[in-house]
Image (cartoon, rainbow, N blue to C red; front, side):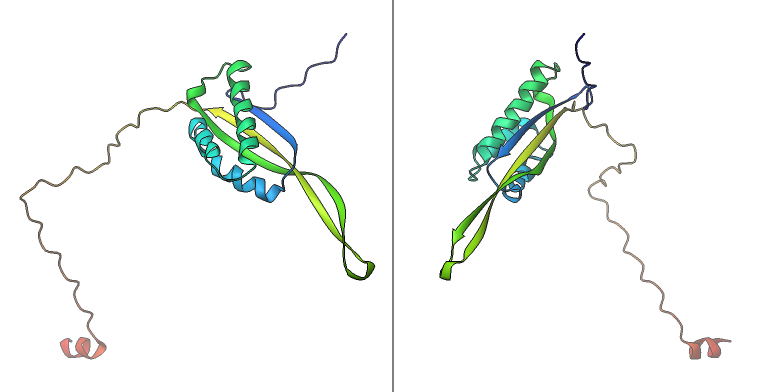
Length: 162
């Protein structure tokens, strides 16, 4: 008699990967996560590969893990994957101190964070033409000049006309 397995949190066309205790502040990590939200996974991997931020390598590893989870655990097509969600959260904070003048101490906080990346399979369909699209005007025909709006009559002109 084993423990019951948990119900799946995500939809069938989604996969997730989480990295915890990343030694960078959540604000800095969120700057990198913003760059890949909503991107196709191949484009997101390219963005992370050439990013100058130190933490981009770790985010790339997490994204690759999410892609591998999608492919191996959920049988999703890698070419159709899109980064649906890249959420950043706080983790533990190490408290340190720095010696200051006259025997005082200044507090230093070293932040840790975590990132959750959810990839989703989206099939691209050919865009259908709209029936309401207007055809381009034929060449050689001239349009009639636009009419000018009639000037409003003043109160004196109305009295004189009546």
